Image (cartoon, rainbow, N blue to C red; front, side, top):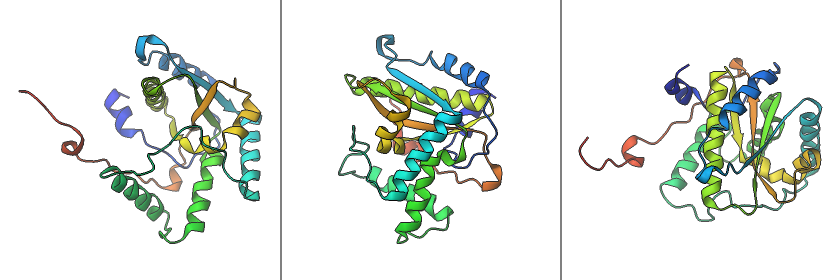
Length: 222
């Protein structure tokens, strides 16, 4: 698989089989992803790869909290600006329409939307997950570094024939994850990532992208 194929075939897969992910593949991916760029090479990511009993325990504890109506943990960072302006507001709204529309869930059916969202915390059935932390002392530039690292991980997973789904949703249950993984107190859980083999029988919803002229400006003579 070449680089273009990896980029264009990568998407947030939300249905996985239970087929185990070989540890050797994960080790290859994460060893190569360590070469992702970061300012002054400080490599601000802290990654936990979780499978088997520890992942089952995280899913179980989170599922119990959801079933009991336990509120989400207090946020440790702002996922979106409180007043998302145009065109970002419209793009986010279009994502929701496409995502839930593909599931046959109308906008007004909030209960069904909540049930669909709850699949996040079962990792969409994936047998492996990655939890990515960053030190509380880091600033916006280092958060960007973590994003480049995670994108590198996801592209390398495609090269291994695997799929993934990055999930900021896990930050809403960061205390539950911490009870199982025991990260140092100075770390913030940025996101989780479900990893596995796609369940191709579940169907695929590919969310579109803005046209090039909306996001790219060419300056000079090319």
